[in-house]
Structures are given as structure tokens and as C-alpha cells.
Length: 150
Image 1 (cartoon, rainbow, N blue to C red):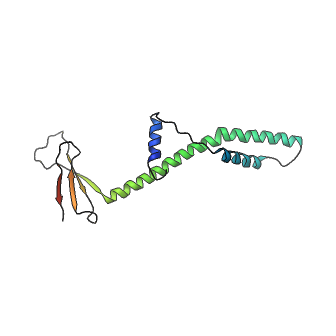
Image 2 (image 1 turned 30 degrees about the vertical axis):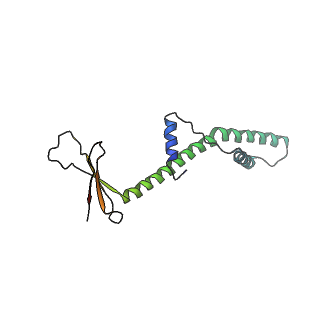
Image 3 (image 1 turned 180 degrees about the horizontal axis):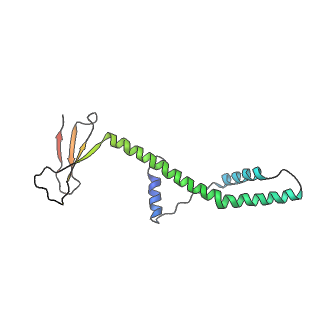
């Protein structure tokens, strides 16, 4: 999932209220984490007072996990996933842009209206890949001009 833009698409769909993303911790992992955290805080004494305090500590650990640690962890996981996918996507875009360079050229006509935009896009491929340059237009009905380069 980290090497596809799928998670970004999922987040976009969630933003548009098309899906709901829920991130949860596996119940066994949650129980193991809760147990280890509880063991770190509990007293090793066997008196009734120590047992009562251990019960209180256990309750505090449960409330802290449910109310604070897990929700913050879920937010962190979402942000981490988003950052990793965005980094991967930007690296892929950089690779593609190194392989293909795009530049806009004005149309090859002498009369250009003041508010008109150039309709040709010139795409140059590196010489080690292909020896052709293509001119194409994103507009329907436009001609495609192909010519050989040296």
C-alpha cells in the first residue's frame, strides 16, 4: 500500500464522505500492550491496599489507552501513511519528469488573438530513449505534428 497512490485515493473518498476509514489495533496486540503497560505500573506487594491500588492503576491504564494513546496512535498512523505515500508519489513523479521533459511553445501562427492561449505542447524525449519529438494538442480536432530530430 505504500508504493501505490491508493491510500491517497481512499483519503480523498473519505473527504467526500464516500467511505469511512477506521484504523484499529488487533485485539491480541491491544491486550498484550495493555497488559505490559499495566505490569509496568503495578505494585509487587500482596497487601489489600496494594491490590486496590493495582486495580486503580489498571483502570487508569485502560482509560488512558482508550481515551488518549490509541486515538493519538491512529492519527499518527494516518499521517505517517499519507506522508509515506506522498513521498513515494513525488519520487515517482521526479523519475518520470527526468525521463520526459515537457515545455510549452507558442503556436506557429502569425496572428494570435490577445486573449487566446497557446494550443501546442512540445514534448521532448531524451535522445537515449527515442529519436522523435512529438507536438500534440490537448484540444479536440487539432492536428498532431511529428518530425524527426537529429
